Length: 101
Image 1 (cartoon, rainbow, N blue to C red):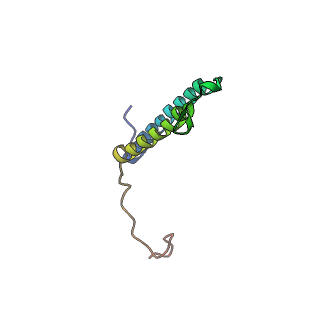
Image 2 (image 1 turned 135 degrees about the horizontal axis):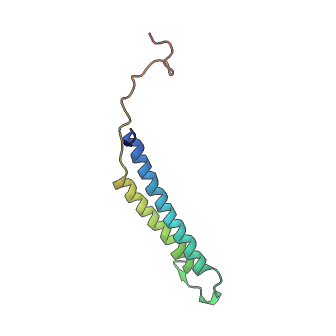
Image 3 (image 1 turned 45 degrees about the vertical axis):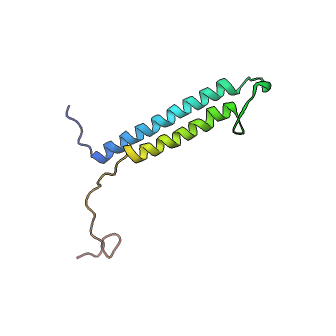
């Protein structure tokens, strides 16, 4: 079966969406897993604070958020590209092109 005749912009957008959802999925699994393991059923006396946050919140929420911001910036600056969408139409007087001769 021959490969589908697909616009390169669609292929690029699909690849970027897959990477975006992969970043989201990894962050989601890590955050929920870490917070569930270290945040629940814990003795309050063992609670430590890191920069004013309980340690499980800092390592389970704050750090992944900061990492995701950095990864998202690098992804947008390096990986994502602008694609040509085609030739621009000439401007017309009428928004819908009605009345052209």
